[in-house]
Amino acid sequence: MSNSSAPTSSGVPQMLIEKLLAVRGASSQRQVLIKEDDIHVVLETVREIFMSQPMLLEIRPPVRVCGDTHGQYYDLLRIFEKCGFPPYSNYLFLGDYVDRGKHSVETIILQFCYKIVYRENFFLLRGNHECASINKMYGFFDDVKRRYNIKLFKAFTDVFNTMPVCCVISEKIICMHGGLSPDLTSVASV
Image 1 (tube, rainbow, N blue to C red):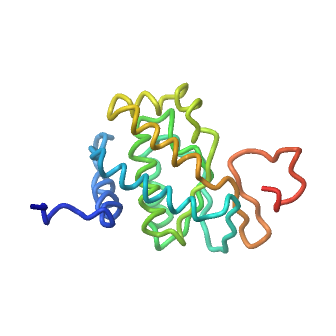
Image 2: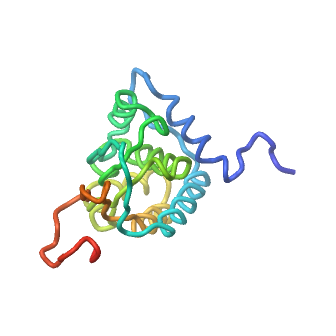
Image 3: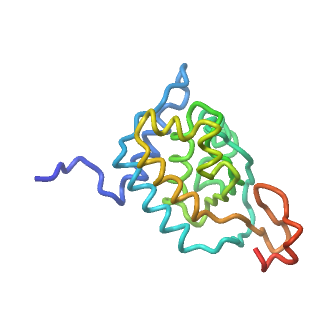
């Protein structure tokens, strides 16, 4: 017999958005408890979305372009509070969602959930910290291993490997996490 109050897999991202936003205004910057099964649903779903997109995104304004969040979940919430929550504001994040900060899991899961729910308004590029070897040096690996397990870390890595790396806004503005390779001769070669 199924538990009718449990969200379906399609309802998990919206349920997690609500849960992750419930800590807004909290006096302490606590971790949000997220079930591993729910994280797997999000990772599988967002991976399919990334796989269906090109490595070079082409979007139109208006869009707010944001840099590194590095596990600073409460800073991410402040960005949304100041600039508008999706879907009322469109976003392009340039990578480096995890490592260094205390809330990498919350940060990346909220952003992945927004990508799932608002896929035409919320865009995520891969940064150099969306990489297993970097995660092992700067904290995300240890955080996921401590809170969950290595298998879940591998699932995150599988998603990171599918993320787009570049975005062009209105055929005029090129956005990416890092610099251009001297080997690139045109946007088409991305």
